[in-house]
Amino acid sequence: MLLCLLIISNIATYIFTRFFFSPTVLEVEVPGQREESGLFREVWNILDSKYFQPLEEKELMRGAIKGMLESLNDPHSAYLTPKLFNELLIQATGSLSGIGVEIVEDEGEILVLRVAKDSPAQRGGLYEGDRIVEVDGRRGLLLDEAVQLLRGPSGTTVNVVVRRVGEQQLLPFVLKRADIEMDTVFSRIIEDGIGYIQITSFDQDTGKDFSEALRLLEGNNIRGLIFDLRSNPGGLADEAIEAGKVIVPSGEITRVVDRSGNIQERFFSDAEEKDYKIIVLVNEYTASAAEIIAGALQDRKEALLIGTPTFGKASMQYLQFLSDGGGLRYTIAKYLTPSGGDWHEIGLKPDLEVTLPEEYYLQYQPVPGNLELGDTGERIILLQRMLAFLGYPVTTTGLFDEQTVNSLIEFQRINKLAPTGSLDNSTREHLRTELSEKAIEVDDQLLYAVNILRGK
Image (cartoon, rainbow, N blue to C red; front, side):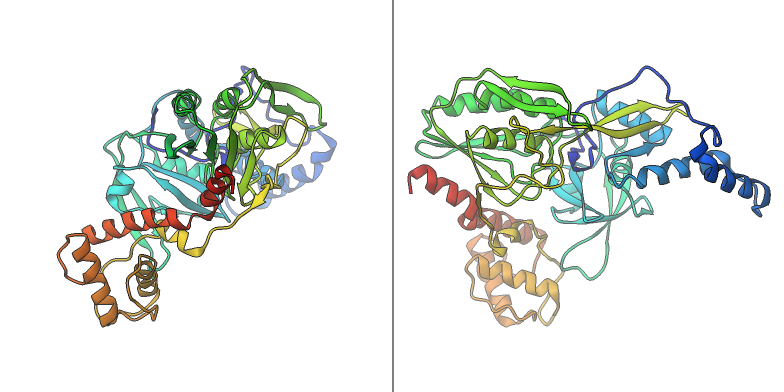
């Protein structure tokens, strides 16, 4: 279990696959030292002599560096200011404090992928699926920048603004940072003979926790295992490899190659072959370290992959000190499957592609509040879809009508709540709980896996 507040996805390499700290200082080349930099030097001299305001040379140089890195079209390569770099070193070597969310970069936006239980984010009202548009007054943030702004000493506050599905206006939150313990490995027996393990991300103790969870399940003489890596954004590749050493049979787990395709390193397992079937569940948010282990099991033909194509992040980043106290993070290599398969920017293709019904995702939608009889709009449609999914007689009209009120009252009575017909906090939490429980019934990917292990 890792003491941390902010688990960040390896989709944008916030938690790097491996850290390489060079003892040397990167030399900053003076414009004009190389023939190819003549144009840069020319523009620099024009601005230096004719621009209408004095130049801040340090800022110009940093801007040029950022532009150069952006031209690589690689979201995992970036210049880190001295402040960001120092905070990253603290994050890499010590405990964290923050608001308790796992975020990823999704289509140019910061998406809240997971909210820790009993965290400042959960207590304050943030939900999975929220999109962070502003942190402490700053917008247009990259993932690294959002991470650093959300982090901070326990007890301090941070202002967060999110865009939420079904809400017409942006929602502001003032959250107090704290330290939180977050588990990454969850296991259970689904039914006699079928075990289930979910890994939500690969952090400091994930490999050890996975090994223990697998040992306990195997002690129950399972005949099949469902290994759930859906929405696992990655994390520490070393921890994924540690997990691979106990589930991938003796042989190669993954290999690292440079830009010329030369193999730099191989990682192996010496585990005995399992005497039960393994099915791995994946989706479009299965990324990086999670793809390493899913790809190994599929490539070695030790498991079936069920779900949708994965994210496709297989690159490894190098982190180097710079002379200004900042850092340069850039891609130096990538991981391949044991047979040399390359899934970078492509993703792993499931053996059986199975999608989920729209109703499944209702569990991730924030239950709308502050609604009353006569209200209209998208939030009403969302509420009506939720009630209908739970089996209450309501028509999706977008109008908070008498039928909707009566269905809500019936829901409150069944859950021993005050039958007010309005959405107070207690009613909203009960709705969220029931939506999560109901979603299991329409989790076609999980059900498909169970039926295969049943022999159907």
